[in-house]
Image (cartoon, rainbow, N blue to C red):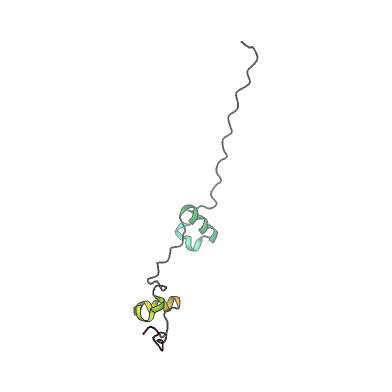
Length: 104
């Protein structure tokens, strides 16, 4: 048996520092967030808590790329009007028919 003194036990690690407070209080002023919050607060609260997010617009009622090559014969009048007004596609008169049918 050795009579040498034992080393003291290691000290426990210090506790981690407390988390930083949130950049914004997303409950403060939420009733009027669209007019009352700054753009940085809207962005932060939307990405960190799902609050203050701008509503997503509804999807387009028509896909103006589908069958665009033949819009004048395949699109409905409603699709022609909507695509012309919103995407400037399908407006005006159809292109002239080819003068000759090379496959005939």
